[in-house]
Image (cartoon, rainbow, N blue to C red):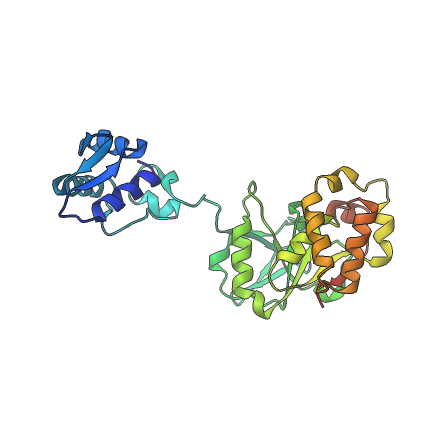
Length: 298
């Protein structure tokens, strides 16, 4: 049994349950016939009588405790699947699909009406990994979305503007660590309308593309404008990283020419295009680069 087979069976038993149903031959249909010993094959077609459907429905109810006539999809969560089946991985979502990593430079998270202390002398923290759906209240006026995981652990030592010292920092997420991109976006969709959204990313085409594609993002956090050229021409700047981001650069150039971006942001795009170089968040931290807020759009 897998999710596709369950859905195929559900569609079959729900279709005219009192009549015979004909389906084009398919590997999944044949697998259902062989596994549950029902239906017939004739002329490259699969035929299931009303009795076949009733028997199939009964077999699934015995196997999973779920009626495929009433429930079209298997549960999304592994914990829900575990109530019915020995293979919890039948769930649609991976175990970490709802996880977000959050932190704050001040060391205190103000969530769900509570003050949660993170940074202590005993154990420095990269933040708290929590369930996005269980965050019901955010008592921070500003949210900073962070591109790179390693930066989450050092948010309290970066040279940032004082007005974002009490901000909630949230890791954008990826497909490898415990924090997921979809969970971050779900949180921003729920709370972003009445918060100041800032994107802290690499100073490269992909990083600026992230800033432009996050809903409600008003500012980009990065090196002060006076340091841009020095950063992009320094010995730790990456030219190979830039060369791998041609698609993102083309996107930025098109957005620059629409007239919707702020002049400083357009200037940064032009400088990246001229210098053909990238400067990563990790280098901003390692070299103690003063950071500033840059308005993204007009």
